[in-house]
Length: 196
Image (cartoon, rainbow, N blue to C red; front, side, top):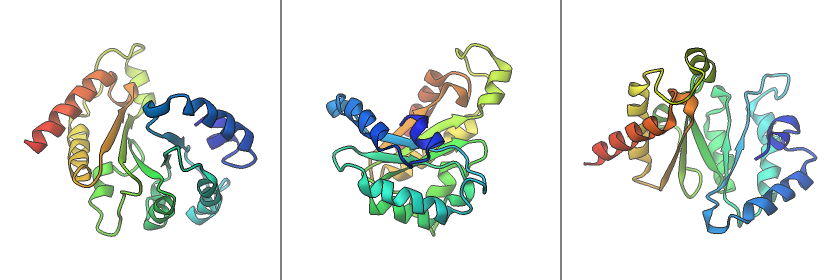
């Protein structure tokens, strides 16, 4: 979804933008897996608590059209709670689990006894990494510059656990380790090895 919806307006007063985006997204037909509401980190000045954010998110998801799957990514680690999961589950919204510097690793969330991260028809893991660290090491994103082998292995384990229940989507950003195609190869190999 455009940042004007998720970052600037934070879901308020943007119905026209949402409708315009959905009209364009629907043109993808069967190729449209979902629309992702990727939020930035919110400080207490923006939302005093998770509940304040959920008060904003809940009506937005309630109005979301049933014919377009939706996924939600939050970047406040203290918000990775059953309350968030319950809100998403009420609307069949997929909880995006980011592998990002300041967020809990997806595997740690998958393994929590008090939390069920499967909130929609599939699971979604995004390997995002640390943009600043990668950019400091290379101006071109055509080779691995940070060894994230241990993290990729944990993400493969998370995929393995999740896919016992639902299909899993994994997205890999070039800024995860410097070169997304190689990270995808590593993740695929480790995921397949785990299932062999």
